Length: 312
Image (cartoon, rainbow, N blue to C red; front, side):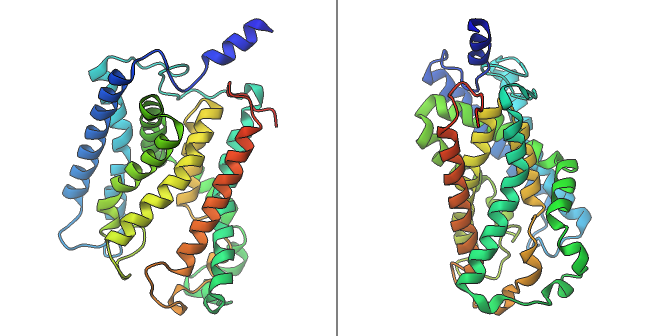
């Protein structure tokens, strides 16, 4: 029993043996590389005056390759700082997969959470603006009604299989940035700061309408602010999954499935029926829902021991 507990304690995501100054320097190197590489790629691949909707699918895929930059920055930072490339344990890249101690539960949550907060957000949005309900909107989206009810499953499958881009982001944010932030400033400030950093990193994409379009009051600054808020809330969940599983893979799956929009009600909500405001009903619904689900997950964490094993 003593040996098992010792092994569990070794498998953590934060190396507290390194001083804050050293960790701060490593973090600074990582952030500079992550932003420089990604923004340079976006600058080179996004045409002048071009919006996300203007791009072909091939062009969008080319731009989206920028999602790999956080992981590339992670690897380059480890080469520069000589931290090594361990797969598991303290200071590792957290690329290993461990199911013992019921850690498989965190993988299961990774598949459930995106649908939970997305669908709940749609429900709240409809309650706030019931006039946006359109029973035939799925036809405009060119989606068969029978397929519509399989969208959560479709998103789960396609998101998991096509998690290449999400791996690029989470391999950097959760695999390197968040452990460093924890070491430098503590848990709560790190969760907030990490979300803001992640949201600002998306700024070039938000400015071309990738996240919220371009036709809204306060574009693009309001969109960047909204992205920072959303990334902070979702980032809390992604970080928790990474901590408790000891691996970035649950975060990768959750991120990828979320990008695939796993919601049935999206086929019955017509955003054109809602008046344009800085804070739309759909955004308000998603914000409230994400905050509620994040709070619920944090509550679950309190029920689990700190060594990473889940006892639910």
